[in-house]
Length: 161
Image (cartoon, rainbow, N blue to C red; front, side, top):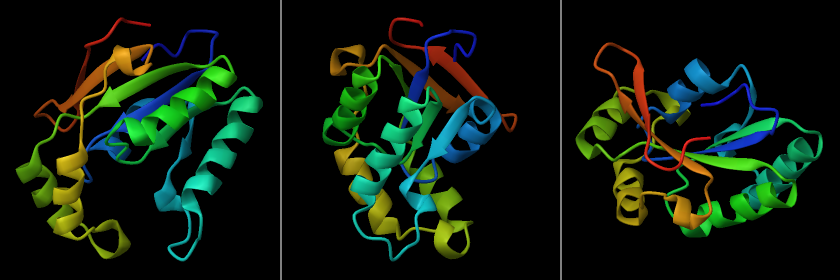
């Protein structure tokens, strides 16, 4: 999480629903990165992927650091993000939340309203979820886990920034 670099960053959060991605964003990235998430669009919004990519394009063009907080489970979701970042000369870091299916289901059950997703959605994401690597085009990969004390522990698993 090198926020001292002059080169803007796109942070791509990768993990199951209820894995801690949004909490990690709030605690560690929100001071520097603009949040982009399909969850922020109205439920009835159409073409969410198109809208998201357009918003990211606008932010990157303005030099804004961006965090994409969706499940981003596989190359079919993160490759277009990486391409867009590269077009703007932005480095791309994957923040990898290794799957803890039991923990995600437990945290999701405690959610209320729109924040709670059907359990079948978490299971479906788990099937598609793949650990990102620098071979996928990321400049760095940072593993994020709960630290057992209400926070997060991180470690670089790809080349550091």
